[in-house]
Image: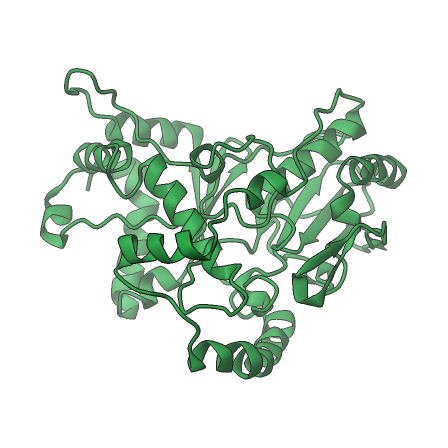
Amino acid sequence: MFGLMPLCFATYPAIALRVPKCDEKRLKQSLSKALDLVPSAAGRYGENGDILELNDAGVPFTVVQSQEASAPEKIEDLEKTTLEKGPLISIKLTSYKDGSGVLAFSRSHMLFDGSSAWIFLGIWASFAKGDTVKEPSWRKEEVVKLLPDDKEFQEMAQKMFGINPKPTILTKLMKNFLIPVVGAVMDTFFLYAGYSLTRYRFFFSDEELALLKDEATPKEVAAGQDNWVICPIARKALKLSPNQLMGNGLTFCSLSIESQKLLAMDLPGLASHLHQMLSTGEGPGSLESQRDLWRVTNGACEREDNCDLKFAVNNSSKRILPDYGIGRCDSVVTNAGPTVFLPAQGGIEVHLDPSVFSSAGCSQSQRQNALDALRQLPKKKTE
């Protein structure tokens, strides 16, 4: 899936970090060590992603000198020129007159999902600082073991969705004609017109987050339960190592709440309800459900003839801004999504996918009212 889709579907997601000081030599030397530890990152895909050649082809590292005084405190531009189809990772370092810089990192989603990308950035930063580095799990044997064979795949799909997935004319038409043709057009709009890069951005300070957390945490809980909302993580559900590097650590979780019930809930009530739905052993957000959904959806993608069963839903774990031995990065932006929460100085920044409103059929005034309400949320608490 990630090898076929256009760039706006995050087939080559980018992460741009503001670094307080540009040290090209340190960055390149530590990157070389990181690539020695994770040789798949320096390889190349062949046969449309069916094979990965460990050929040490390397990572393009471009250095550009900006005429501006200092790197922007808040990065707005994704430095899209780091995107190169071919190399699995591309890097661009933009240096500014005061020595600060922007380090842009893009990678093939077939190689690294979001969690893997940040694990790799952390490994790179550890080498740069001279810290001890724990070798990650980059080989795919443990992941491949989890994929069902044809018989089990059909049984799981029948049990979970009540269907018998099989190749259709539509999937063949999309794969062989529509995606290659439409994808080229969409890539042009993405690279030169910023298509799909729009994000509504909100900053919540640590103090505002504390208010939200306090308001959303139920004060009274049933015996034997706690008051924390649990978010299932794919690697935990699959019983894989937390530092397993993979391109497909994605799970699909659909939680449905009746609109009338939702509108009647306050923030603590909603948090408690979500907690119950996510933590119950048989719920759609349970670890067992996450494991089964990962296996059947990835099993569909691995069939020789693609089936009409595919999901692409993001599931993000905690991100930590790296320090490359030249001071901690203090700003970040990414085109991964659909909606992401990113660390920022003194709080977090939320990048909200605009399709949240278009998919719900919101008018322009409804969208603006919702955005205004989100910006006022910490101050008005449950309003």
